[in-house]
Length: 386
Image 1 (spheres, one colour):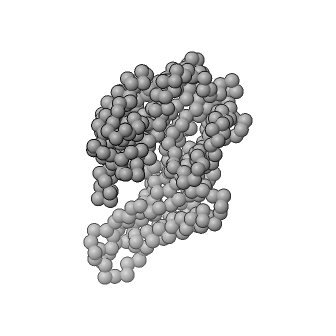
Image 2 (cartoon, helix red, strand yellow):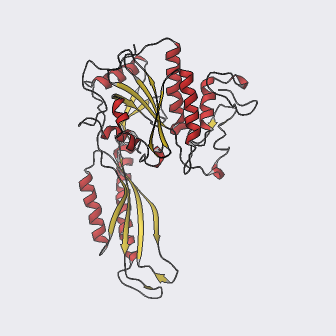
Image 3 (cartoon, one colour):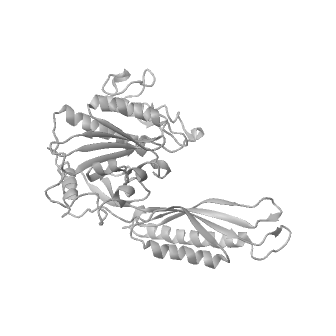
């Protein structure tokens, strides 16, 4: 990739750009400049961008407003036998907030330095994947390739804020069922080695707030049964468990981050004045739990921690996902066999892991078969490149 010579490129698609920049890179940078950033993502700009791409690729574009102002866009490349289970290439259009004072360059300028490094919010999560999908389809179509089954390129909103007004709602929509999905790819993480990491499941996010009521009073006294004392006990219980899981990760070569439970204290609230002992205090945690953990037993442990902290300590969830489905990576699974064989033919090394965070894939797995697969077991319906 060449550095900027004449300022940021303004176009897209397959047009030429200053400095001889590859059109794929230019399209990527154009997409990065769209401010689809929370808390007020410019989804209209993304929709206009996708309209143009669909026209360039000569693919029909379907738009479904799943919630007010939240539109799922789907480009469909029809296969020779559209009755077969389809392939879904999913990506989200939104990006997380920016603290510009910590950035070397404007987070939405998509600046490219002399070494070809591109600086922009959403470059990895996950606008690079979106452009890879688009350009892969563009190349295959330009080569005159014909696929057996439908390929859907889907672009969804609100993944970064939990997907409630995006994929979580859309998987319950009749239009989702019509897609007839057999196999889906979504976002992942960059690997620092030469291997390609394949995530076949993900941890469940639990966002929990523990409420600690206590005896109020004046700050000059030793008041018994205070909210702060209960709060300290709760914090110690959660953070002691955090330390144990951290040690498990650090002392076992077979563990990855996705195999352990992470616990992080993210918010504390309570009190009105320096000299007033508060009547209540709250503490919030972000937990990410692997699919190997018994979730009912784990919540039972949380209840015990709260009971041990003192009288009337309670908890509530802001988010509590219970789906522990995983996608098969067994060699007798036709979809995995087809995918892994294609990678092997290109001499690609695959590393299988549980995704450490959460993606929209969890909603697709939740509405798939009872085994949690997003694909069919019919051996006559494996992916084909012809």
